[in-house]
Figure 1: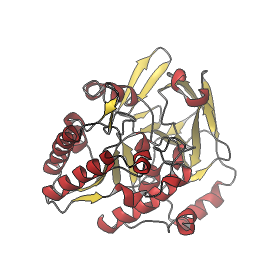
Figure 2: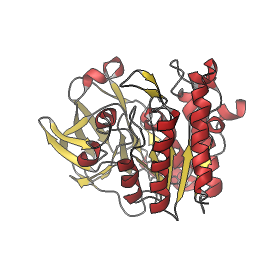
Figure 3: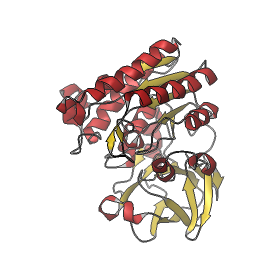
Figure 4: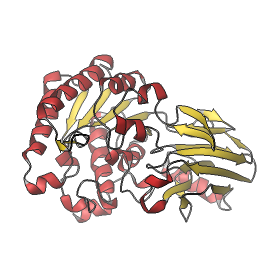
Length: 356
């Protein structure tokens, strides 16, 4: 979506609100057909970016956070990147309207040369403002001149991701640290995220929507939002989970028979430490469904192979730590790159992975 010379990546609707234009990742009609948690998280800005080339030397953008009461610590972190080069300080969004000012880098020529040598996914003259995962945000005002990304300034292939708050980027310190975006970057692809933090409950409506979207490969994370029935406060049902997984993956496989669909289950989580049998049951259900589909383009990637070590989790023993996101990205990019024709991981395993 393009407005005011800015390309709003991962935004499908701009809804007028009192503060300005709310940036929405998931269409309202679809969002309201999903579970209540997804109806909330579907409005949040995980993997949303504002991308543009500067026409003026300076541009000022004003944002309003519409859900400050939900922010951890009362604020959230945004980032400004020039291509793949981050600015030296993050931008904090909180209870008041926040201005982000971007100026043309003094070292643009040197950055451009470095980007060309490294075959970076984005050129340094493309400004990217990465928004936080837990915020509902409205664009209030733009002061300055911008133009949309030029041909060749963004990856030509798309990796679509659907999953829980983990795949949305929860517990990553900064937006660029979340594993789904890192994975796409390593594969030379652009990330499209329809993840629903807390609400990835594998509804058929979401499967049909994903199947109808433009993408070259899809990554589906299933399980963690269904292993506990939040509304009822009881453990999830393996039988109910099997039914959801069966319908969800059948829709995707039938409607996209020629595109790669990579499916994972539960990463390491606290249930593994307590010996909860539900974890193994849920993992087996996902693996069994992929096996029964028998389609070469639908690939099961076991969650415990992607993130096996509970020491790479945050203190809640559910979400990956910053190091966990890095390891997940390296392992996932390696697994997908072996299958996705023409693409291989763009970076060697991280230092964290090598040390382990």
